[in-house]
Structures are given as structure tokens and as C-alpha cells.
Amino acid sequence: MGKSIPEKGASWETVRHELESLGKGDADWRSARTAVYVFNAGEDVLRVAKDAYALYQSENALGPLAFPSLKRMEDDVVAMGLSLLHGPEGACGNMTSGGTESILMAVKTCRDQARAQGRDTTDGEILAPLSAHPAFDKAAHYLGLRVVRVPVARDMRADVPAMADAIGPRTLMLVGSAPCFPYGVIDPIEALGDVARQRDVWLHVDACVGGYFAPFARMNGVDVPPFDFEVPAVRSMSADLHKYGYAAKGASTVLHRSEEQREHQIFEFGDWPGGHMTTPTLAGTRPGGAIAGAWAVMHYLGVEGYCEKARQVTDAREKLSEGFAELGLHALGDPQLGLIAYRSDDLDMRAVYGQLFRKGWFTGFTTDPASIHLMLSPAHLQVVDSYLEDLRAAITHVRETGATGDGVVTRYA
Image 1 (cartoon, rainbow, N blue to C red):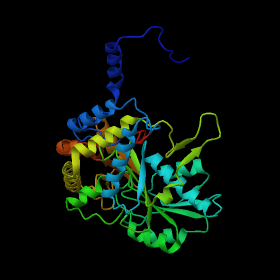
Image 2: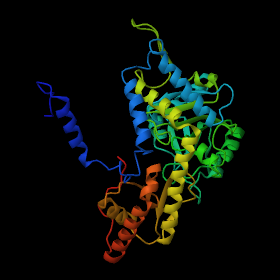
Image 3: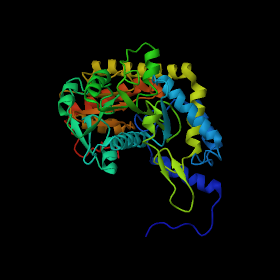
Image 4: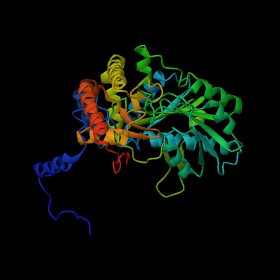
């Protein structure tokens, strides 16, 4: 039998001590030794997000009449996102709990619009590159659809001709990523847009990772290709604020080209004694703290601050890439933002990963092809040399001992 609630409450000092003890075995993200799950932009940004969250932790975005402040902040956050992502006149969106919910809402909107237009959506298809996030499969599972995955091209990006060939009578949505999670590369969104326009298919861009990073990298001079609403065929986007927006979890945005389109996202119900209910996203209650935290961090950093954070991340990636090359390693594709997966042609990368893990580095792992996966934060710029030193030692150990990666756990969950 599991633990039961205590008969008597404890002091906050006691509870706090136990909370801190529970976290002693967690990944050490505060010292920048974790390159997945957490986006460390510095203690000052963390403090802003925490304090803003605490100010509105009890308010509930389910009730905009009761809490118009949250409605104002959500509208501001969405407007700021759309201004970065070339949202046209009439574009709109909502905040969600994370990328998975944003993607689910975009897929739901696409499906319901197709139904409203008289299409049979039974076994409707989402056509996605092999590298697209599993959230599309989760959305399909919940919504009675199915995902058709197409192998990526040699450059690890979406294979546009192959995706065009895979479109069938039940295809509802094309997916492109900016960037994709496994390889950190941006799919050719313009070319996918040409296909979507010619075949009259919904194009969704999953910019959960890059939506609040790529615009600032571009301002810094990075040659980021068109990936957002500036591509006319893009109908919806997902972009996470709790990634490179550096907001408190969970905060994301789902964005639409028009209000007419978003109407198919909204849920309304009135056939019960509690009165009419309207919710724009999956959740009923939505935590005010997540909305306030995002609003506060965006105002705290501003364009100048975000550009500086983006520069720190790309500088870290470039320094790491140079170090990988010196060690005989290479990146997959041509990553331009904050994600990079690197590998060797002759080493067991799981064994290398295991050695780094033993030295306290907690990162991701890409399985196809086997490679170590880093999702970089601004704080990582300060530990690049230390990481490369430990990586060199890990490679030497694997080469000299013939160690293998058998039994090394590289799953995300």
C-alpha cells in the first residue's frame, strides 16, 4: 500500500527540507550539466519567472471575466509571438500547457475544419517526416486519425518529393519542423508550402523548439530560412515559451492564420445545469502563473535580451562543433539553432554517452543514427571546455577498453 496523508501537518521548514532531499538525485541543471528538459537562461531570468508565477499562482484563466488581467497577458503574449513569426492581419492564437497540447489543438482544428467542409475524416492522415515529434502521434491517437511518417532526406530534413508522393485522398495535414527535435535542423518549409498549396492540404509548422529562438538568431545574422507565417501556405504553428522563451513551465502557444480558422479549435457546451462553458484549449482550469511568468520574462528580456541569449546559445553550439571536429566527430545535418546531435563513424556512441553520464552530464540520445543529443541553453557557453575535456576522456576510455553501450539507458522517459 502506498503512502497515506499524514495525520498531522508538518512545519514548512520540515517539508522544505524533505523536498530538497528528494531532489538530490535529480539531474544537475543549475550547474549547466543538463542539456535536455531545462532551459537555463541565468538566475535573473529564473527569478523573474518564479516571482511572476507566484504573483498569479492562484488566478485561473478559465474565468476571463473574473481575471481580465490574465486575458490581457495572454493576448499580449500571443501578439508578441505573432509579431516575431510574421503573423498576418487577423492571425490569432492561445497559450497552452506545452508543445504537445499546442500540437493537439492544431490537429483538432484541422480535423474539425475539414469536417465542417463536409469531408469524411475517418482515418484521416497526418503526413509527417520521420523526425517529427511524437506529439502528432498522440494527437492522432486521441482524435481518431493516423500518422504517416516519411523517411527524411540525406540532409536529415523532410524529403519534400517523397512527402508529395505520399499525399492521398485522406491526407488532412502536412507537418514540418523548425527545427526537428532529433537532429536540430529546419525542414524546407517553403517547399512544403508549395506542395500544401498545390494539393490544398493544411501545413502545420512545429516550431516548439525554434519559435522563440529562430527570429532572434536571424536578427543576429544567422541565415535562418523562411519557416513561419511568411510562408503563405502555413496555416498553424506551435511554439513553446518554456523552451527558448525561458518562461516557467508549462507555457506554449498555438497560433492560427485567421480567427475563422481558430473557431474550429474552440469547445463550447451549455447543456448542463452549470451554464454555458467555452474553453479555447484542452484544459479547463489554466494556471495564471504560467501566463504571468511568460508575460513577465518576455517584457524583462525584450528583443535585446533574447538576441543576447540566442547569441550565447549559438556561440556554444559553434564552439562545441569545432571541438567535435577535432575529436573526429561530426554533427547530423546542418543545425543552425540550439540543438545538435553528434556522432562518430566508428565509436559506440552509447558507450561514450555512458561515460559522460558517469561524469555527471545528463543529455539526450538520438537512436537513428546513434548519436549524442544536446539541447543547449545560454548557461552552457560557460561549460563548453569542461564538456569537451570530459568527452575527450570518454572517447579515450571507449577506444582503449572496447567498452560498449549495452545496458546504457538513453530514453527520454
